[in-house]
Image 1: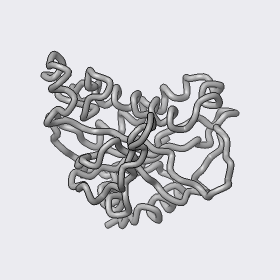
Image 2: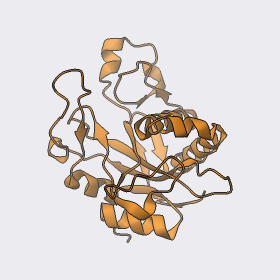
Image 3: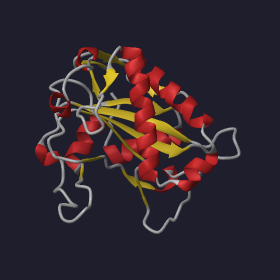
Amino acid sequence: MTYKMNQQFNIYCGFSVNSQHIETALSQTNNILETLPSTLYKSIDYKTTSSIIGSIFCESIANVTGAIVNPIEKGHPDLIPEDGKNLSEELLRNYPVGLEVKCTVGNITQGANLRAGQTRIQLLTGITWQAHHREVRELLGLVWDFVKGTHEFNYPMITAAFYSNDLVVEDWGEISGTEGRNTKVTGMKVSGRIKMGKGWIALFNNEEYIKAYQKVLKINFK
């Protein structure tokens, strides 16, 4: 896969991340995803697939930037500077600098009933990243799809990456799952999605995907 890249992307979040880092990590992640058996993707839900993709990408970004993946499972942000590796769990739960990464497959037309291995871009109606709280202000958001390739099975691939560092509480919806054993979750609202669209980093270099993402995230190329 090749990408349309925003070569101007360059941030410092306790460590430097630029467009070349992102492009390399995308390539590494996609290559790894193709090595996993197709039966795996057929037997898990899309939320779990998103988690796998996000985890692989985080490891790849860490490798190319010199950062580390947050050592504790529920630590925030997902990636932190290397000097945080020996800190206490209490400090790593909400480390002051770093990069949070979220991954989504996007929303499709209701009732489409697509299965693993079937491309979704033709039926894409929206992109919504989710979080466990409304205080996520800085986010690297990934989007994926089952992309048509040379294999008999269409493997999941990252098809876009977006970034915003000016999200506010109001860019996130009300938290659901606050009762019982459900996981607390909030979805990004339109205002947040527009901010993410303005901060596009990489788009799968395919006209159908670029047009779809332009439409749902209000991307305006200069």
